[in-house]
Image (tube, rainbow, N blue to C red; front, side):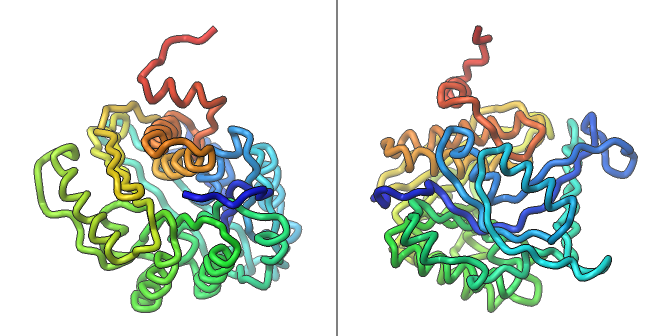
Length: 357
């Protein structure tokens, strides 16, 4: 994949920032009194890999003017080495705009995780292309990779149009487009025809298309994998066939990827990955990984894959690094991975958990 030369930003994402609250000690939400607060969004989770490893990244987002939650989010993004810009939207009174709340139970053992999204009045739903100077960002400053998520694209008609405008500007300026389909049924309800058209248009401009079997089927209408064996490893051929069908439909893309996950318990998963790059297959067979909190593992995979592309590595390393950053993300209380350095990620990939002094 050819990257834009001399780009100021390695990755730019449009996103709607919010906060996540998680009970302490892996307890259920309904009986908890103590909660941990963090800033969150799927797209900023992807940025966190490159940002932690020293690359320049930016989030295009919106904030509620004068909100202490907005101030908290800004401080968190600065701490994570992620730049940001976007409009300050007046709250409009107690029943006006706010940042979304993600209320998450991590689960434990055979008690599965439960996530409740409280997104009424979400300020990020108002974002539009006019909120940003796209000529400055893409032409004067330069962006190597524009990454977008189906979660943000489906938030509102306004964010759908913003994603379409960003994809168009990226293609005009030589910026690679990455699209993680991230289908959510509750976001699509009553908008199926509209969003299928939006997602198909974005996908037609994408250089990298990422998603699981549900994403490809429900967001793009690609026939999913056939019913196969009992474990993920035995289903590889049917997953490959699904991606081949997507490749026939979306010829602009040169990279297609999906994660493979089998849940033994909330604390133990079998984690793998499948990637097609320039016609060659790269497979990371599922391996057992320990899980502290599963939320964000997929974003970690995408972030690691994009980091490998940005570093100019051979494609096999993109999938390997993405597998490892996804596995790293689920060992952390935050829903994103913050690798100390590349060596730490490669140690995760090798299964080397020995102490480093």
